[in-house]
Length: 257
Image: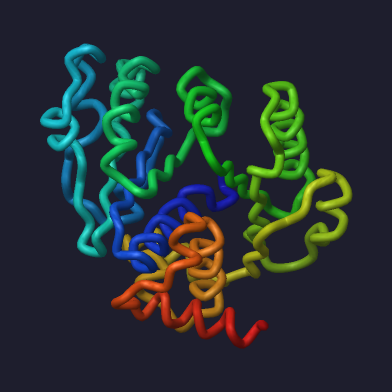
């Protein structure tokens, strides 16, 4: 917690939505204190808790459509329950059934997970094509990510699918990128510099940076990271009707090469 995981999930999901104008879903599975709905300024009260009485075998698209919220950007999302007690009613089998149905409806499914290895988290991590881990430049965060990497190794994950985002969450002296990479024996894939009140304001007003501050360097970094997370098919096939987001990313890529 506190390293910007939800901000990252929300902004990357929006980046994919804006890049490709394709079906993208963000699932909030931090079932005790999930805040995706808050970050997206959603007034809708629908959440996973509305499926708590549905048996996994009875779950269908009609029931899922009831809890899928639609953001004005085009992003779909399923919010976490408002209260922790409601989250305890959501089972691993229900999530499995939901993902089985949703995987054929969306090109991209992103999941904001809790900071533990419960059964639901392990199931999602097993299914994931990419695992993104956020870290801040201080020892407690590095220790937590080091322990997570050790867990991934024990689970037999290919660590090539792990992407690490170094989020400079405070102003002042922190651990260097190089020292963190040396400790983790893994590269940092994205470095987000300290953003003053940029992300705090985005959270407080429910206005994600990537949507409302497109000219900010942080938005550029997040757009480029979303592009890096895109499917190979998308990256190799320029859209017929490119979005402003795609045009910005394409320009930066061309300038870099």
